[in-house]
Length: 161
Image (cartoon, rainbow, N blue to C red; front, side, top):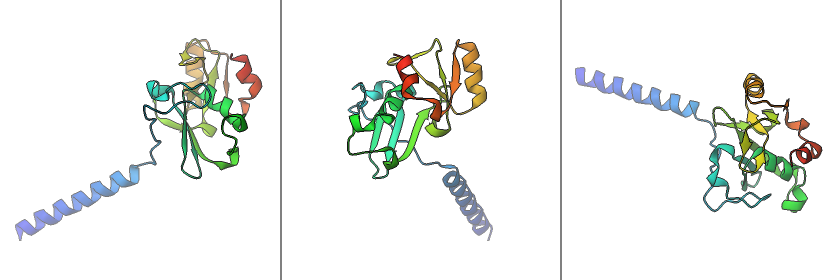
């Protein structure tokens, strides 16, 4: 009887751990492979994992970018880079938060421009999941302003060249 109780306790513990791990799991953002190139500049993206931006299409195709700046360049001119695709065919977009390095939904992110921190392609939109982090970074790194997704226009991108 004692053995039965121990086995049941162990079983319940395993089930509890299994459930809590499964419920805490979030859909993983895929990581670029060594062969994956940014469709905008042609750079091998896996060399710069901290700066990766990812676009996932409804057909499960994934594109990787070496930073938010190249992602926005692509997004505003998709017909140039992938003529058969459009913004409506995108199911998810993520950038890595500069401090945590965890993927953040690009449409919810905050971007600092004009800072003294450069990405793989030079001047960069530095992404953050939290507005407070973006403002702290702006202050610490001489940034010019914090932008949201809809604020990043082709004119802004041109000013970063």
